[in-house]
Image (cartoon, rainbow, N blue to C red):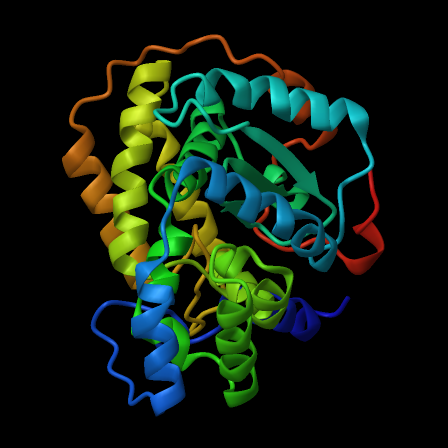
Length: 306
């Protein structure tokens, strides 16, 4: 892959404008049908543990398939699961069946689905340099699931503003046909799964990303990891991004925003005690994906290796 092609790949992943990310301050004029969908249905959606788990399970296979599918390396999947387990045990959402999947995608990204499913791109594992960095990635995504951030976005009028008139009509019909199932009804979910995927992939906006950072530091403290050392992953992601690109993923949102997040983490965290907990699986992860010291993306021929 040539230099321009590599930059294009990164911009496709990280270069979507921040205006495309839903946030509380966005103002949109909704059609009467969209207003009805928001006021009568989406704004009133519940976020029970059972509902979150079902939503995540209904979405996981189609979303994972869109980013390359499950990475077919059992040793790596087991190692990442072993590492993540020590963090999952610190979750306040004990009813969630927490799990992690590594996907066959070379971009440095990660996201989470409702109900406790963390998805990590193999490309990110190439740039994670310490157990604390990997712990911060996982706990940040855990926080999105714990705090029901996807449902938070769906309840906002900015979510309805993303939908086409056809999607709005389909959603209204589905809610009328099956008001108990709500967004979990196959017809409703099929109408909005693309919009949900873009939110999960692009991130949730500065407000909710900062909330996830704060929650991640608390989980890391309980697990014995250092958020100070973990925050350096944001510096790596910033160095990877092409100059001038504004990014919108759960882990990266442009250089200025990344610098602000690092500063906020350092202020919130305080002193680093230097402790290091056991990190099962980490050595196996790094034996498969040694940390890259040069900041560049894998070529297309590397997609299925090692």
